Image (cartoon, rainbow, N blue to C red; front, side, top):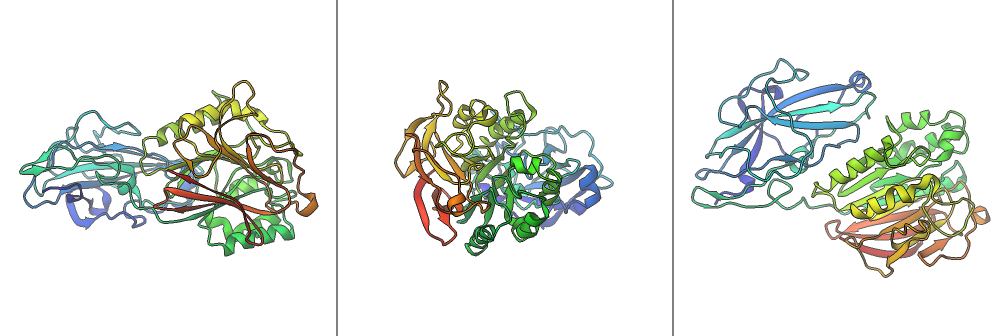
Length: 459
């Protein structure tokens, strides 16, 4: 019986088209199609093109009723992928050849992010038959200095196969090549901000470095003076870190430029994927209103993420907190709640992560209260929570080290929507993935490794 895994992807010579080669493209092999982008081309922006073949490797049965579509165009956040058949409809034969990787093939109808087609748009593949596809990789000017296309074919191109083979049933499905989504490794994510350059900051850094965390999300307010002290401390964590921008990045000497350079950011808001998490980084210092450039970009990326079945969790990080107990800073700066709360619930966002108040706070799962946005409606209050519940969990993790002990910000009486609050510890908030990353166990972890407010959320 023919199966989806009988469809394999092969390279062309130097990826420039022409005849198929014997070199198969294997997922999880970095740069197996596109090489790292040179620094000069990261600065100026560039377009690259490559040709691949899809091949039916089954010895006796044909494949039919193909659907191919692009489900995710944001890897990483400052690039874009498009694709197209060498000819339409795709057919047997040899693909055209281009002079170099910068030259666009002729006659290709480029397709970008889209929903699953309603019908097949590719011809049957008899045993051993091939079809040529071109990939267009666009890099924005001043892009981040990285490139790893190891997930391109397992995650980005969905090739389910339906109908029947010539002498047996085919396999239906959607997502990753007609197969289930890939198995996810366990992982640990740390979240904190309001760091400063204090001895307690060093304690929090040690907690992260010694705790086996695979990813670090910063929620802003890095240094409370010039950036140099913070950068020297956080350089060892740079390979695993992404960050939102706080008000101190804008107000201190040097402004935001050193941090954009440190992280390689073009914009101060963006989205990215880590494992099976879709992360939205908001800049709460600038316009977030519906219709603004930032709101439009975040909304489009979030809605597009619904078509990516490798994503389980969606989270947003922003410096200014949405709601919480009375503290040194107010809530809902820039009317973030009105701009995003209902949008996030409608699009299955599980967490909003914030800081600004130098303490720990965590809400229940809460829905949008249009009459009083900073007093959300509790929709679930007991662990284990469920990802599919129409509510999100709001976290304040502002214990990164700038203030400690009695200097941590005061907290008023605990609101009814609040599950936990603490102003006596420094540390991080963590998410620990298990069960094929379909379960997250979340806790506040202090600099001594003690855990508080542990709860579970299941997909």
